[in-house]
Amino acid sequence: MMKKALDITPNLEPLFGTRDENLRLMEDSLNVRIDLKSDAVHVEGAPESISQVQQIFADYEQLRRAGVNLHNGELHGMLRLVVADPAITLRSLAETGKQRSAGIKRMVQPRSINQRRYVEAIEQNDMVFGIGPAGTGKTYLAVAMAASALLAKKISRIILVRPAVEAGERLGFLPGSLQEKIDPYLRPLYDALYDLLDQERVDKMLERNVIEVAPLAFMRGRTLNDAFIIMDEAQNTTSEQMKMFLTRLGNNAKAVITGDVTQIDLPNAKKSGLIEAMNILNGVDGIKFVEFESGDVVRHHLVQRIIVAYDNFGKVQRELPLNLSEPRLGEGQPTSKPQ
Image 1: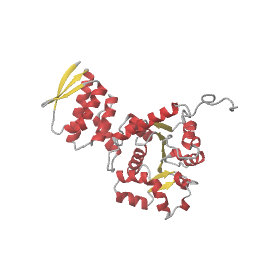
Image 2: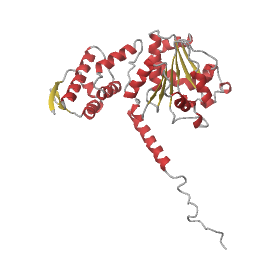
Image 3: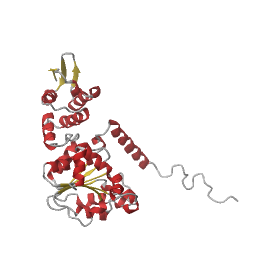
Image 4: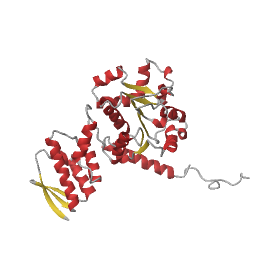
């Protein structure tokens, strides 16, 4: 064990995080003790851990001087990666994120180990499945990677697809124009686009069909070349729909399929095309599966706690015997009719 004092530079406070949550993350993950003094930050722990904390402080200062301002949620997520892997530095993450984010309003930056695996899988494979609970960044990161590829001219169009299971995909029965019929089901994809790119730019791309947003039923019979295709809410596809979608892939095309197998809205959950694809395609060369957990949730910190609470409740319910309130046969019941 050793101690070291790190100088406090101007504007260093944002690194500490809300209620010093970033310092607590470093303490818990690196097994160090950090004390804030008026003139320095005192760090106590193993030499290699202190060196890692010192590197984080130095990287943050260099990024700040270079004009890179990381908001707290983004910074906290990056620090989770840094403390989990000594080979990763804050600067390397920021530089890689900057390269991915050319022309995009926000930095395309994974905030957990699984998110990093997901982004790297998308870069290295032509077909990726992202499976996990809400709020883990499955759809947002996929749309961000698609926008990055489009702006870098690696592909010429983005196609965003979603099964409109709530309407049974019988959109003709809904009032309004075709666009008005499908928009409510595709709104999460629009939200991600407008968060990443200027609205005017997105609208122009939509008008020119550079970005196409459509229900899954509209993919039948097409071959999708030179495109980045994303299917969201894939747990609500049937086996036939999933196979149809997966076989649309054309030349110079990449597909990302996202879904949550705990949120299936089909009449028969066992017939989900996503579950079937997980069983059939796992291990196929060129296809990568990345699974997310509640710890990967990057929305408001309460979302992660809510997901864990519901998961725990579900486990308790599954472990309870059926119909506890009903007496078992022979208990508290007459064995024969009264005479």
